[in-house]
Amino acid sequence: MRVGMETHPFAAAPADSPTLESLSVEPLLTSEFDVDPGSVYERLRRTYGPVAPVGLMGVPAWLVLDYREVLEVLRNESVWRRDVRHWRARAEGRLPQDWPLLAGYEVRQTMFFDDEEHRAARQTYHSAMRPFQDGHSPEGWELRAAVARYADELVGMLAAESGRVGFADLAAQYTRPLLLMVTTKLFGCPVELSDEIVMDLWRMLDGGPDAGPATGRVLGAMTRLAAHRRSRPGEDLTSYMLLADPTLSDEQLGRELFMNAVYLNDITGNMVCNTLLEVLRGNASVRRSLSAGQVGETVNRAALANPPTANLCFRFAARDVRLGNFWIRAGDIVSPSVASAHRDLLAIQSSHLVDSAISTRAHLAWGAGPHQCPSAARELAGTIMTTAVGRIFEHFAKAELTLPPDQLPWRSGPVVRGLRLLPVRYELSAGVVVPGPPEGAEKTDGVVAVPEAERQRSGLLGALRRMMFGGRKA
Image 1 (spheres, rainbow, N blue to C red):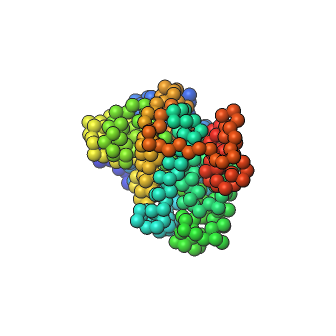
Image 2: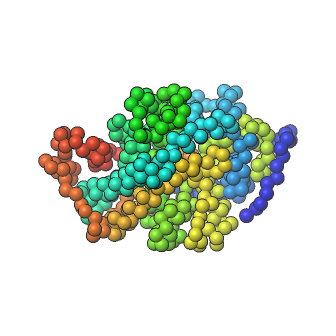
Image 3: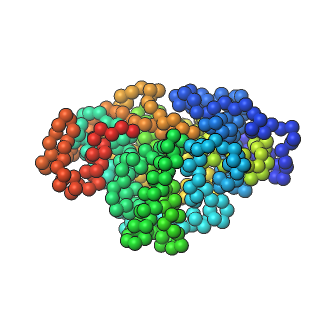
């Protein structure tokens, strides 16, 4: 791997160097990208080198492709800023009206702070997360036990619905509801979160046509939760955020919960699904670590091969700087591509990283530098992921994809590399207990109909049963 990076700390871009706006850019989000983003990254790398000009829904941007350059952008906070107010095209009013990818960036929260504002906000988050980070504290122990219990209950619900041998969508019927159950508990939600919040997060991250309204709906829900927990504090992240910083308004806290909902439900959920996929599709490196009982390493290897966030949050150049073969102007938008950087890393270090039985922690799924995912959140997410993945392969004696890997449907967007569904045929292990339907339930056309009184008593699991088997489509 190349070492060192030539820097130009106070240089201005030469007058004859091309500007981003002057270059002819090819759209990134094409049908080819949806099917095989790796081939697009490689073509861009061959054409432009480590940094390429691309179009994102009509807006030119620099896509950073090589591992070294991605690390430079992630680590050098003084040059590469997170605050969207540094974006020159936005400040000059040159963005298309209602550009859908802007909605999430207009939500001012910790991810988009810089310098002291960012450090102070992260400290509040660390303080609030600390009780859940420690597996020996009451809160940490209870949350970890709940994750395992939820996973077991969801597998039991699958078995009750489809039998000991059957078909399931491990995205819609296992991973998404599991993360919603964890979020409900961690945030201290007074009512169960519905699958619609996940859909709204997708709409926002993928730049859907209603990204703005979707962002507003999630923000509204999180702001109402903040107000609820201010009046009725409990032993949950929302209450501990207020305890760590009592000056937070409901709106500010709602924005922080919004950020955490993105990471917990979408990013963590995608990493669970992508890990399951890499095992099921026969990735030898991932399978070896799983068979050795190293579930954490299994997740690391899957994150290296198939990161849940393909391209990390935008950065904005604080000054003119040379990166790759181009001069980046102050205020230009830059997108660090983790997926492309991982391909670069694997190509350079394949003998060490793919064949090693020890670690693949060089992956950038959690980011790097001052804005990387906080350690408390990474530890908690790691617990959720290893439990979710481990429980599936403990409970399933067999599992195989019902579609060829190259025919699985992926979400179309510049940020997340996430499956829309993960269909499998499974066979349960002999020791798994299959629960019977609730008392008084009737089965019609393969769907269990639960009496209203039982639905009210069943709480979260009842709501999830209706979500999972009520015919909703993502």
